Image (tube, rainbow, N blue to C red; front, side):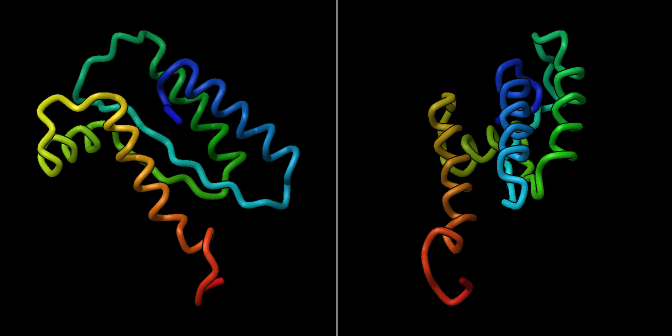
Length: 112
C-alpha cells in the first residue's frame, strides 16, 4: 500500500489495524511504497498521511518491507529499459518482489 496517498495510506492502515484486531496471533507483513523526496508532490497533505500511516504501521505490523517509489522508477527505466513506466508496470515489479519474498512461506520445503 501507499504511505503518502489518500486511499492507500488511510484505508490500507485502517485495514491493517482491523486485521490485527481480528487475528492477533498472526504475523502481519506489509509492503509499503514510500514517496520519493526528490520530486515535489501535488498532494498537500502527503506529510500528514505519511506520519499517520507510519504510526499504524509501527503499532499493528510485525514486518514492513519498504519500497521506495524513486527506486522503482529507476529500476524500471535503467534495468528493465522502460522509457516511461506505467502504474501497471510498476505494480508488476512490486508484485514480483512480493511473490519472490514469500515463496518459502507458501510452498512446502526445507524451511517449513
